[in-house]
Image 1 (spheres, rainbow, N blue to C red):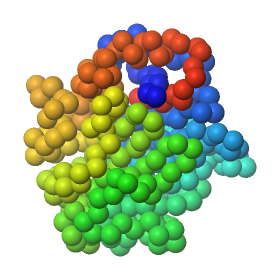
Image 2 (cartoon, helix red, strand yellow):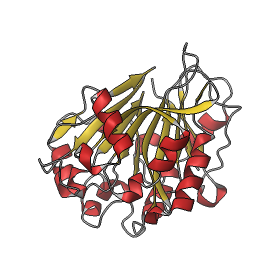
Image 3 (spheres, helix red, strand yellow):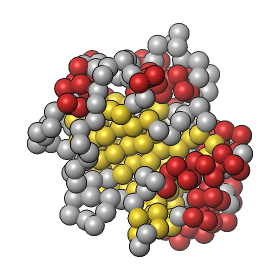
Image 4 (tube, helix red, strand yellow):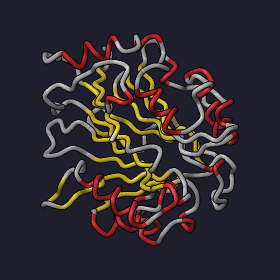
Length: 292
């Protein structure tokens, strides 16, 4: 059965009038994408189910230019969405696509104010700040070279799974190179999201070599988000999903995907979004998607 998609997008980016229902239930998942023009930061909250709280998965935590004041502001906004443990915000899983400051500059502010339980990252641990290195080594969150696994999630909770679609594709994790970037796949029912970070040719070649791509199945809802390089724009799935005439900046790409303009026909553009968003009686889990 298809996962219901509920979108909460600023009116300036909307092409459909979709209003949120009263709020996510314990069976629903949530995705918050923070302003892609200024930051690389995506928060995924799993359904809580029978648990006391939702599990939080944070993919990247950085701002463009690495400015300390902007980093502190990002973490302050982020903390309002995080689950709390004895009153303190908690990141259960921190996932880092690469050591580039645009993806990591807010980590000092995050670690100083937030409890981070586990860390998974692309590249060698020595490329990151000490707090990341110690946490990753403690939980075994270091990916091997030339790694693509879409069968075994490295995070799984209440029906939501996170996979390393491609990581360390150059074969040398010690290189701080976009080719080693982690392409993260998030799957919840029929909803599939690829967070592409700065992935370039080697990462896409590695992903292409994996025959298991669940988002290619009929009836899947697919969201692609990231800051692609010019060469990445020529690679699938960017080329098939995005209007190249509009693909000039990360914010424009993300806005296009969020408005459902570039999603597969199975998504039925904005019609399904509107119907799902206005329905108050639901029997299937929903994915609440918000641009913050």
